[in-house]
Image (tube, rainbow, N blue to C red; front, side, top):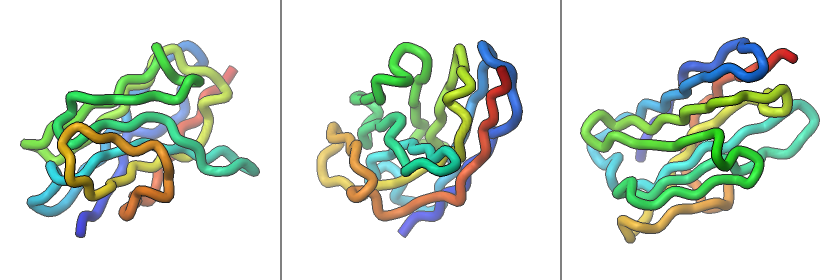
Length: 127
């Protein structure tokens, strides 16, 4: 089992940058594929970015491709989301999630494939 705690969310102006971080407990962090999701008010939770256990493979939603970068540090049990050129439509609660995965190169993009979730961190982008 793993516990996840997100941090880094805040109010930022459009065009600005933020770096979200997710800290995981436990000694098995490297056995989990990780992902970031977000949920805006009145909308369903949506996929943002995913990274494989090894960190070699990443995948992004079209809406954030080229602006967001997901990365992980298995030695520190963290996964980060660097967000650049932020837009008002990026406003949401951002969640970190973990999926136990046998392969070191697989990533997950469906929320149903993730077993563990953080409590979320609010990102607000003003226009």
